[in-house]
Amino acid sequence: MLSINREEIIKIFKKNIKKIIIGWDEDAFDPDHSLKEVGLDSLDSIHVLLSTLKDLGIKVVQLHQLNGNSINELIDSLASKLKEKK
Image (cartoon, rainbow, N blue to C red):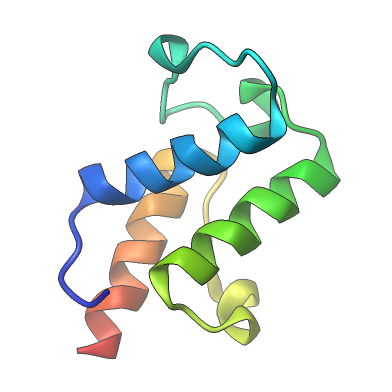
């Protein structure tokens, strides 16, 4: 997946969050929140991030290079990594 936009990354995040939080209200999603504020503990946050990285085709070794406290900041970091792959 080389040409992917922010909205598609958000959809992937939402899909992976829904796998963890049963009955999660997708409409309440605010990408300015952290994964913790969405309701994920640290292990679940790692699972969501790893699943999202896999879905985007980003190598796990690049996880340490992701920056951001909010989901929006993580999406910006992921989008940057995808641009680097081109």
